[in-house]
Image (cartoon, rainbow, N blue to C red; front, side):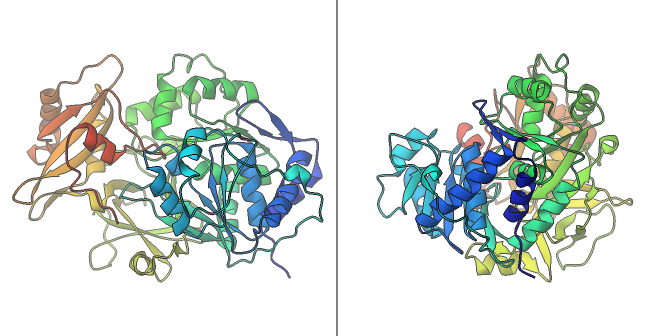
Length: 516
């Protein structure tokens, strides 16, 4: 029996009801199933005409738009890998570095969003770039125009062991790495995501399609549903879209959920169509998550995952009252098909309550990082992935996250603090809306704890009062030596505090930020 990849399954779904609306673009343009079906095949033909085939790499430099979805479906149908370069859009990476990244992954064709004219204008004149086309007409160059293709319909050229994507990590521990995942593993990912959707979904993609929102969009379309695309996150627009389009499912980083809860229309907008509002990424306080449940009802789910591992655990609406020892909400328990273990330095499993490295085994784990065999040997062993995250399990199997091992603050020999745990406690202070904890190295190589905080609306945090708050409850070991008050928290493309930018804003050398 020949292999059928996910794009073929999607084409089968689209062919059943060609008049059914399946996509809504950020500009309000609406696409039917028949139009998407035809667009995928025509775009595949156009890509083939530009030399794209099995094992080619198509780099996609685009925000959320229907042409981006169509292009990656078409490329995957041809057996090509799609490299998602969304991270470079919202970061201050120099065009020369972007060009180096494009070259380093052996890109055969670069597809550019015409809504990025400044980046494109700086990038395209650089030497040794692969051929580049725009996803729609642009004065800066030729576009990939599938309307002119009238050849035979392309057929699936992918094999189960072929990579379907090169997905960049969030970069929380340094320069983003490219994660490889095969077609057969992506089928498992989509099956797991589809199990979280009910009925005929309407999914709102208000976060980048390059990560979890893209996977959920794929699953929603495969379920015969509809996907509404937002180019940028705007809390008011998200609320209005949920009401107007009768959105059933949405995923967003916790920072976006926080903005949603602060919007004045949050309590008066009809969000009754929601069946699942999923969040993930950085911490949100238990109080704000309770507020989310009060506003949206019992539809708020927490996700813990990694680009390398897919979705690992989920916390259900009624489980948000389960708190760790420093006030952090549980990350939940493993989703079906996923096994987790907390292991110590020698690799042995640790008892409940003891912090160690979180390791994951599931069909969703990556096959490896692109061309990094040494790193792959470090993080992949006997089917297990070393996440680099620290955490612990309680007696009932609920997971609690302590933070990244590479960001652990070493106070002295044998004494350390995990930033995420202290951040969770700081978020219980009523004056703190967001925070980031980090270590600053002293001449003796020990580290001092620093905390950057963003005030909650209507509050003016006093650094000394925050230090006293920590000392009174957690003791002097966890007390920050310095508390910095920021007006806003710089965020990276996946919605987490952008460590290098925070330290640069504070005038601190980023000596502890690992670049591996």
